[in-house]
Length: 262
Image (cartoon, rainbow, N blue to C red; front, side, top):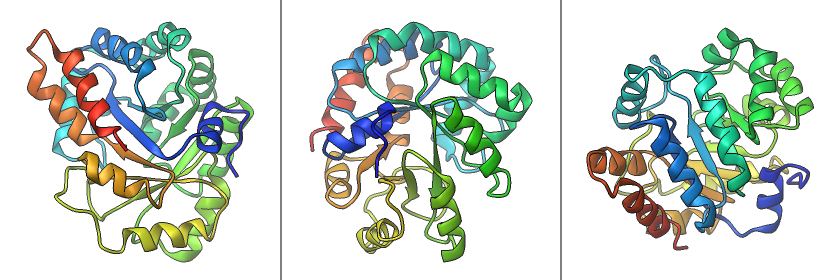
């Protein structure tokens, strides 16, 4: 069951399923990310995943990877993301998760990274490339800091590995709705609902669905059988198209609000 002692658990325990938008920290700049988070405080969302840019991402499609590259070329550092979140947290009521590569966590120092994440105001971490063998030790450190570790299950994940992931994860299970990398898709997989229900029969954790979700209708459909829908590439692509316009934040808030209309 959701753990109400953490913002992630509290939202999943007490709010109906809804949208969890994904944003890239520092794209087009960190000031825009900060302003956007402040503006999303009143949005009808359930939480935000904040991607920490990494040059060698293994699961992100061209849209998100391009955003990562823009932020890195502008000189973004992890410490700047933590400082920004510290400023935003008093003005942001929703759960906030860092989507981050294991390479960044270990390069920073795992214990130090977890401590800084908690101190800055993150509620959880998603580490897509964290090996299952390394996960238990890091999961313990994360939970001791008051954070949650959401872990990914894909359509191709074997049953025994799914059970191990579910027993290690906390907060929620992130179900990857399709094989391959992130990106917009015209329709959801026909068996998506059945697959999510099967996972929910094997764990007490909530299940959020991501990858390939890009329209209000898809968000609505996913929220009928999952505990939430994660949208990334569609939002990042919208921001790329509006990046040179003064109404970037306004237009992105409107775009996210429209996706949230479930």
